[in-house]
Image 1 (cartoon, rainbow, N blue to C red):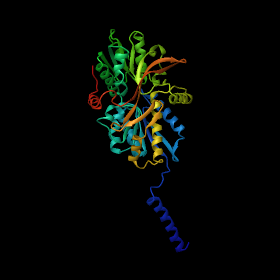
Image 2: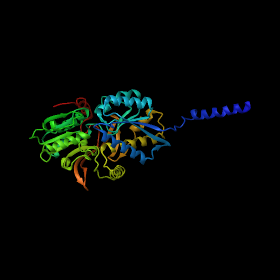
Image 3: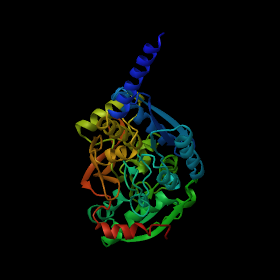
Length: 410
């Protein structure tokens, strides 16, 4: 090749490089890497499988890619352990170089990795971990709760139990860790604020394998029981409740995870029929969007969807919608986070938008009753609080003060 042709060749390469730089950033073509932290083993393993199923279904519905870039999901197991969750987060961000972080499920793990999320700047979405601190004192700009704040449903439930159901004094039984404190704390605040009385508060260890010692402490003259349990713990509680002869004698109400489908698949109808619970999702919600989701999810998995499945599905929908706004470009983390915050999305649970003051959802809250529908246990909606903010019926300033003092009481 002559010297003139060499110079011409280099000139052409230089012009192409300038076109790629001076005319805007070169288009990204590799996969969009998503790191997903889940408790694939332990008490919440079934919940984690539901999240995987919901997430994968949403990606399938979207064709698995945005702007020609495949969405690649890397799953890791935190075993509901805060230390392991922090290790997982660092590995995904620093070694795997993920573009987005999703998860975890357990509230204590969500709190444990928050500091790393803040310092690394990684765009992060929490479909399930719901610690109120993440929306108040420990809010960070790049972490968004797409599922809920832990007390959002129960802040809307205590007054309903007191006034509408008419249970004027009751006992609470709850898992003894951050999630249990906050869900139960929201309920107690709303319930006593309506003029009703707590007879006793009972706390069960996070990993309790037998609920008999805790159910046996329930006063026989209490008018109702509020329970907060999740995963296999919910099944253990309802089994003990029935074994002690309380089912049918003392009405049972609770946080929505008590009868969520992640647990209810293993429940006996005799132990849960008639239980009234509250959550931002109900598998029996009778709307076109949810009916279509339930049918598709059941067809793909043979199961009715839990809130974990719906929340992961909805989070994937938000991710895809935000990425489409940016034409699949994940290079600008701040732009991606802003797209997450400013993109309302229609989920099977209903319309959802992110409150900019708390980075958490404004959404419908559903009061549900367990009924038998076409031979299957379902959470059927009996009342709806439309478009509740994270602070429920409280003034936001009061909620922020109250949330800072949730803890183990009683």
